[in-house]
Image (tube, rainbow, N blue to C red; front, side, top):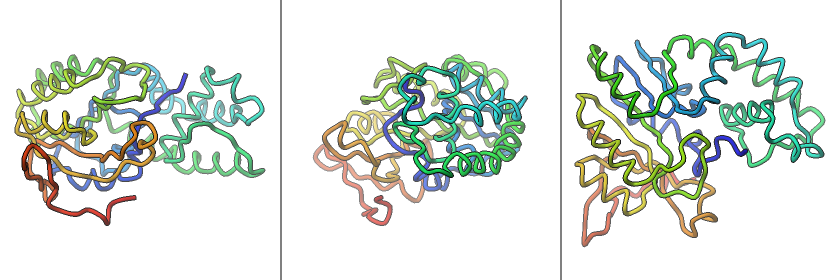
Length: 273
């Protein structure tokens, strides 16, 4: 099982995404994943988080309720190269992969070659686990299908200045996500239509595939280029860019349409990594 492997590296440019968020009193995240956006932004007055993955939910539940137990399991579960292949389905391996992703050091495999690597990793977890626990305790965390989640929210929405961030699986993707198989362009369009029913500002992370751009413009959303996504050219045979589709205009919503091609007015070479 390859948990939480998606094309793209949100943690590398999460500040650029967060800088495009509007002011809000209530923050809602529909596809929480490892929380790379939530943990990097200031807490809102109210925070509601959701992920359809039961593993993600259980992982953060344990972190919230008994971080000492989670820390103990991690300390005992560091996996070395010689036994890595026979342990990939064990819960400890999944926990490690999740933590590597949370702390922006996730790689295709976990191999600790330096003699002090285990100590360094545990020191990092010790440093950040209290902060993560504190932030999670300031949020409501659920595990629902995204459309069920949104319908429940709509019935209880009494907070002004609501903002919803959505990071679904990429619609045109060669990756795999355990609890979100089958997400495609139709799913994305259904999500956009659902979001436009509510009086909320919202943003959706995606790649700049032409079909995705067509869909965003069809529903009168703004397109904001974030950065070139690293590590995807080998999978797709060409470079892709991370974009943020928003229901509101930002200082980076600079797209013109010319002869069915989308031309960005701002050359964002400073953001290419």
